[in-house]
Image (tube, rainbow, N blue to C red; front, side, top):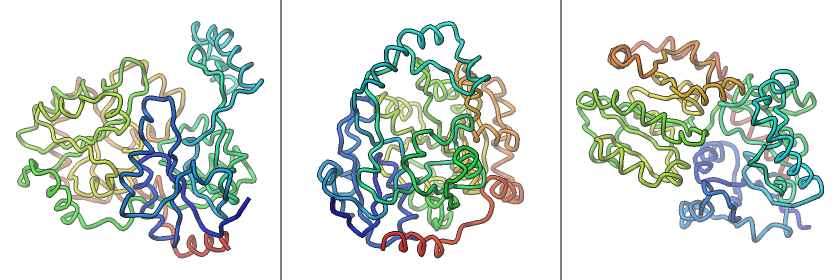
Length: 404
């Protein structure tokens, strides 16, 4: 197979263009974008390849995964991991399926998975009743000679991170901070790790310039009011898809006369609930649904970030933004998160968080945060979770040596 002496980046989701953009600008030249144009059955991945191509056409050169697979390999390949795969039915995957829908379902039904998770670190359900007959096999090794793991965010599951399958896929692991690096080295002692911070949020425009960008795009913003960025995560519980949005609407409506509230709806949610954006706009909220949005600009333009769980929490910390956390009212969701020990939950020890029953206290805290211009606490929080800034010149030299 032909080896191309270039650095390639595998893009599996439209939002990864934003993740990689600043990193590519700072560290690599003449990079090849490989677009995952495979068809997947999962509804939330519908037409994702088409969306990536629409964002790239006329702006950046790219190749399609379907056209280069089995023909060429790149000397260095960056990938976020776990997004692009080939499906194969083997004896092992079929045996696992039989186990999952029988013994695994039994364990799941009687909630024995909690016991196993606490005692041996694995639920032993095999996917339970939702298991599939085929296996999903990472594709990175098929298109990259030296494969480098690019981090998607610090909102990681401390109970299982890094994924077991990565051990045989990646040669180097890029990390946001000591937190994810320690988790990787504890699980894979010989793994080579390099800290890079949060490149997607580096080299941002000034606050005033970021506001101009957002205000010019979203014409209905009242420039005289402070901008609150509401950035809810995706609830991965059946039947509770938009609960973390729905329960806060009555409270947020009480401050719409005083503040602009701009909600960035999760891209997957827009696919799974096509009416959510128009519904929120009808209530008076500003809604950002732009594909390929540079989230750093969105954070930079905000006067206060309202987040619940997930990557947005750590993103706001890295950006040193004023932050208030919103607590879920779903016991099932909170239990699910507690079992997985997410890093972003730790931030609740350092930042004010509220439930829907604290509505008046929450509103008072919003007002106080807007008026507070002290940055010392936010600086300390950034240092606690991310440490010192990385040296992009050193990274550039390392990656180009690998590509030679």
